[in-house]
Length: 197
Image 1 (tube, one colour):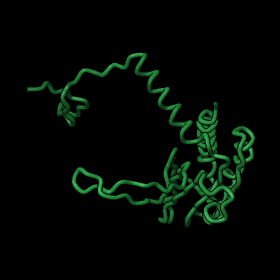
Image 2 (tube, helix red, strand yellow; image 1 turned 90 degrees about the vertical axis):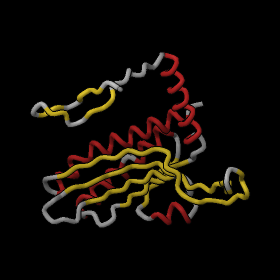
Image 3 (cartoon, one colour; image 1 turned 90 degrees about the horizontal axis):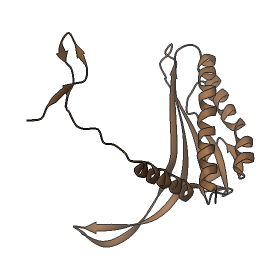
Image 4 (cartoon, one colour; image 1 turned 30 degrees about the horizontal axis):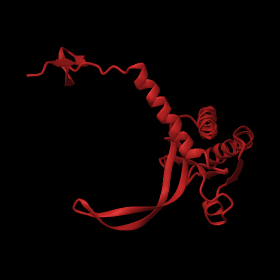
């Protein structure tokens, strides 16, 4: 019979019981191996990007919130281009990046979702680095591959999100502005590191 530990108690009653287990300890070598793997994944993900489209999708968000945050997001493109050493363009139209072919495979997508409930302002933002891929995959029948097929879609290589609520539309823009800048700059640091020889 396993020993149980109480993680949280109210009025002397345990709300959550879990078996007690010894904590896994990471060695210095484990940590170093993980860091090497993360750096290699960044290199694999970003080393061949020649540029980035900053694409803003605000859906039906309030104009003040949508326009304010998109302009802020687009305002980070010149700095990104200068620091990362790649071309950075901005668009609110997905087909510009996907179909014109200027930079067809590399997008930094800023997506904003807002509540539709009057008087309950809330916004969720997400920034994703994505790449369009066409991949050949195996089709299995049982445990044996019987054929191949090509799959098409977006591969998410990096993602961060944030949520804010309350106040006015301008309050939401003020609250999310520094967060949005921090997220773009965090991606930029990972991107630059992934492109180092």
